[in-house]
Image 1: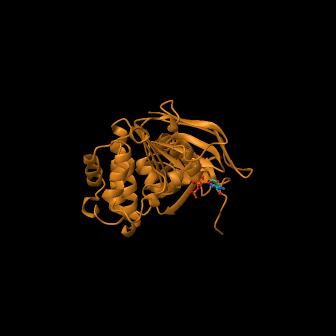
Image 2: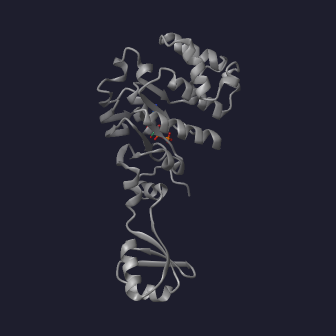
Image 3: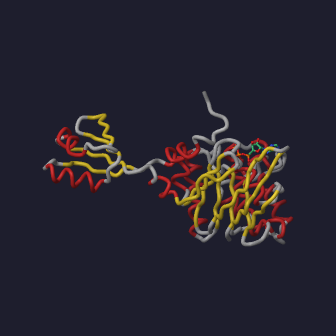
Length: 300
Ligand SMILES: Nc1ncnc2c1ncn2[C@@H]1O[C@H](COP(=O)(O)OP(=O)(O)OP(=O)(O)O)[C@@H](O)[C@H]1O
């Protein structure tokens, strides 16, 4: 099921939380939603599931507004506030109460408890849960209706490394099954491992919407070269627009030339290369570059 956000605008007391935001989230992929604090991620996600009413514009899931679904939990699973569960209830009771109101069989509760690793603590009160257990419970609730679309706000927040790996594998599996997976995260290195596609929002406006590879390739051509004759290679490739940095004897980081151009130059100069690696920008570098002007709260 495709999520379509069309010219979504939400204002609070005259201030834009999001302004004319449009994008599409495709099924069969994991799409990451990134942006600085206050950029409008939660507002957008809450609008998609009808928790916020847009000032103008709309969000559709498989062509339908969330509130028009007869059985929304069977269509869309959302984790928007991990602390939403009632604290005096047990995990099993909490999930059973949601299942009961959506005609989801009780057996499904045990399935999602098992799938999220909560079986052992199913009879524990939610109030006694750690942050990570709360996140798992939130994910369990999102999975309850076996939905085709998942919308998860910071799902790995508070999870230990084992939990983070578990979420990564779970989301990859859900996407492989053809589901639509849309998640926000501040953990860029983690998101780089999870997401196929990235949408970046800054100050309420979309500033990037691209496959993750396209974002990390944008940094221009950078190549790491190891050679037995760095001075000769440096002389050969020095040119306007080419930057060469050497932090280690025999190792050059070259910006402005492709790996092939460096290989040809070395060949022509009769210089031996022992390593030649095209360098990608990390997602974090790409993100920092794109959001530099959009960060509202910068640390000193
Ligand atoms: N209920 C509200 N009342 C007034 N302003 C709000 C409300 N909810 C959000 N905002 C404002 O809208 C903007 C976007 O907030 P939002 O929570 O969507 O950002 P976010 O990208 O999810 O941020 P974070 O990464 O910090 O969770 C912020 O400037 C925020 O202060």
